[in-house]
Length: 289
Ligand code: DDH
Image (cartoon, rainbow, N blue to C red; front, side, top):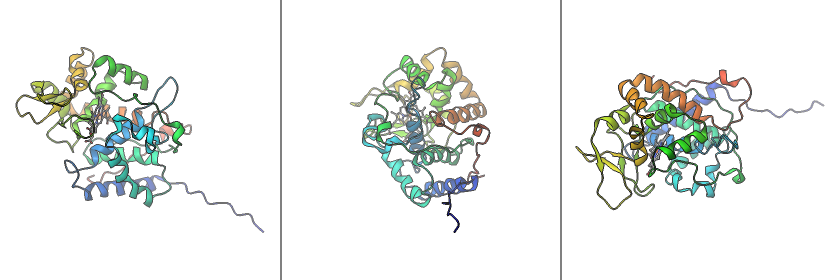
């Protein structure tokens, strides 16, 4: 009698593209959320899953999807991200072979591309870990703080000043919610399309403190509909950060190129990939392409 070898399913690029397509279709279909898209909150889920990384201890990062568990899900910075996790649950049910941690990052990639951002090369290989791998609170940036804090947080992940500014351009997308962070409003007039408008508005608008009972934030003087966090304003108040804001405001192609590179780095923090796979990243077809 022959022995039976259990069949191990090895997904191909086509299989990941099918997951991409499913997420893209759900983004299109569920357009009654926020400014018309779950895209921004999916990007924030992928960023908060990754941004817990600590290069000294090798803990945190996008491997593990530990935000599924109460201690990390309840960290103040993660308020509201349940909407993103719940949005992805039917996708996980349809493609049970993908780990939550690979799925959350693939959703970030999909959201960026579908919101007309650059292509983000993707590598699978994350595995889900248990509650013991949850990171302590306080690893993500505090919006009320300035450049010293930003450097402490992002240097801990292994980023430099240029990369900090490039990452911040993600605030072209989405908005603040009073029932999540306490802050209010979008950064740009087109919060569901990735552009370099965040930098252009930072430099081009006059910003003043918003008069309200909420946390200290800025509003644009002319329309009072846009916002900046103290941590956003810090990148034009710092003489090493500001030149990068100017470069990205002037050149959307440069922003897209640097943003794609730094997002790939962010999304791969703390993941024990198999050797040699850094040359085998997948690039997905966007639905608009
Ligand atoms: Fe952010 N972010 N972020 N952010 N972020 C918020 C929303 C979004 C900070 C604070 C906030 C990045 C960096 C920083 C996105 C992506 C990225 C909100 C509002 C706060 C507060 C949350 C809410 O009320 O719902 C701070 C501080 C920093 C920093 O110091 C640098 C980075 C690096 C990214 C990234 O993706 C690379 C996105 C997208 C949103 C919009 C979410 C939504 O629901 O809309």
